[in-house]
Every structure is written in C-alpha cells, then in structure tokens.
Amino acid sequence: MSKLLVISLVVSSIAATAVDNHDYPGRSAQSVLTTARNTQQQVGWYDPRSLGGQLLDFTTPTHGEPLNVIVSGLSDPDILTEAGFRDYAKSLGYSEECLGLHIGHIHEANLGDGDGKKLEMYLARQSYFPVWGTCWESLAGGQHFRAWKQNGTLANSGAWFIGASKELDSRNHHTIVPDGYNLGRDWFVDKAIEGSHWKGKWWAAELEWRTDLLDEGSDGVNHGIPQDGRVAILRVFKI
Ligand SMILES: *[C@@H]1O[C@H](CO)[C@@H](O)[C@H](O)[C@H]1NC(C)=O
View (spheres, rainbow, N blue to C red):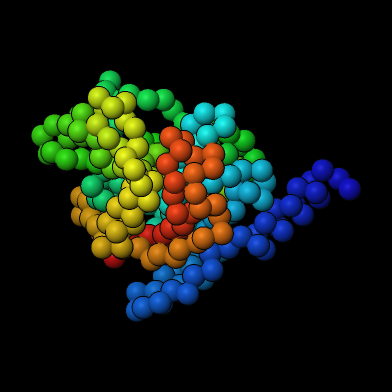
C-alpha cells in the first residue's frame, strides 16, 4: 500500500469514530445545527488517542495536567483563530499572562494530529483587578488555563484543547489547589454556558460531558491531584 493511501485510511477511520455527537437540546441548538450542516467541516475534534496522543499534557516527561475542556472546531470560526480566542478568553474573565511574572514552565501536549508533542500556544489567567489585571492574579493565584490547537495535518479539526485549573498564589509556585483541576474546568465551563461578551462580540456555548477520554484519579497527573475524568466539550457560537 502506498504511504498516501495508508494515511488517508487512518484519517478516514478517525473521522468515522471521533465526531461531535451532541444532542443539541434547546432552541438555539437548531440554528447551530443548521450552521454546521452548511459548513464543509463536520468533525469538531479528533480523539488524540487515535494517533498516539493523550488527554494529559506533558508537564514533565511522565506527568501531566488534564486537558479537560475541548472547544470544538465546529465553533464560531472567529474564536478558532488566535486573536478571536484571546477575545473569547477575556470575555470569560481571563486575561493574558502577565509578562515577567509567570512562574512555571511551558507545557507540551500531544493532540494526535501528527505534530507530536507541541508547546502550549496560549496561557491565560483570571483577571481579578481591572487596573493591575493579570499581574495581580499572578500574585494571588486563581483560575488559569493553557491551550493547544489541534491543527496538525493528520487531524486538522481546528479545535482548542484546554487544560484548566485553579492555582494557589505564586509564593506557592503556582501549585494547583486540592481539586484544582475539576474546579478550574468547571469555572471555565460555567462562564461559557452563562454566555459572555467582549468588545461587542457575544457568545454562548453548548456543553457535552465525556467520561471516556481521561481516566478518573491521579495516575500520571501532575502534583498527584485527583480529577474526576470528565472532559467538557464546548461548542461556542455567536449570539
Ligand atoms: C496551528 O495553530 C497555531 C495557533 O493558531 C498557529 O500558530 C500555527 O501556525 C498553526 N499551524 C498550522 C500548520 O496552520
């Protein structure tokens, strides 16, 4: 078999198994569904495990933090761009990393998209205080997330894979609080579901929980902090 054929077989088999299988309850759902039907792309995200990836990042070679939120590639095309995603994060109450105050290191993740392990593309922290913004949060600790984009050539869904958590303050070297992975994920998800806006752009999201992507517990999890294994799939749309 030619190399090309093998690759296309692999890709089509992932496409067949890893799709957004939402139920789309509610009224706004119908319009989202219609939009999806009218676009070329029908796959919101690919299961990273299909091509050797995983839903834990690589904080160290052996331990990682859970990628506990996926923003589907079937979301508003604007927020699938880097600039649009920044705006979306700000609408949720995060702001960008305070330069110079970041303590910690860049994490890698393997999203099974053919890129292997790649560096996080974005890190956002909760904005506590309008004047000091992120800098204040960097001292006080709080909500933050890292994001990677699934856009390698073997699984180019455009989805954002997000590791959200709640940290202690920076004097504690940004350690995750007990239950900090679940709390960080739920904070992100609650804000997304409530609906948010930034600079005249308004968004809402539909949520699906997946329990089959990540093992519950603390095996391989950074800081040995257990998490419940649930991954939130969000499909964010403009309202
Ligand atoms: C994937 O997305 C990131 C973030 O938007 C971007 O920097 C990178 O160039 C993209 N890669 C490809 C192959 O398009």
